[in-house]
Amino acid sequence: MPFSAHNCPAAMQVLFRRLGVRQITRSTVIWTVLITMSFAMTACNTASMTTPSPTKDIVTMRMTALLVGELVMTDGCLRVNDVNSGTSFLLVWPHGQHTVSVEEDTVRIVDRVEGKTVVWHIGEIVCLGGGGGKSIEHLDERLRPELPLSANCPGPYWIVGDVY
Image (tube, rainbow, N blue to C red; front, side, top):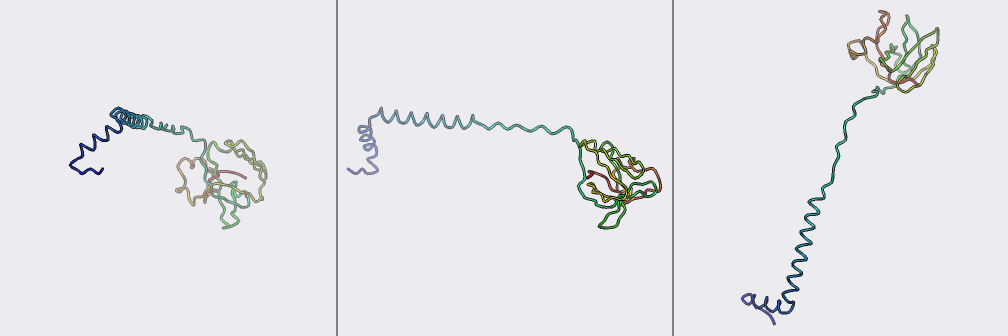
């Protein structure tokens, strides 16, 4: 039997009679509890985000350009003549990374960071990682004390990062 809008209370009475007040109340309570628990669980379940602590110590930082050339000794200065450009670079060894010793035509390099030793001979083609600078003004102030003290050792400079 169809109900009109003004008979809405009558429709509710029929519905209550059919379903029963207890069943409707029970369904309403169950749904209310489920929805409330869902909201509570969502609100309480925040993802814990840990902030990584920054690294305190930097072990080493090296430039990564590549220099390939002939190892030469010119006026007591250890240099590499670049095979690509022909430029003769004076080698600058950053403090604490390498120990270099030259005896006659043998150059022994100990990489203190990586714990390896490389032996070169004057006249060999060598490979170096690092980076270059044209003049002393282009070098970092901390590298200037590492330059050979002889006036016969002008730039351009190659700051050695790695030896191969």
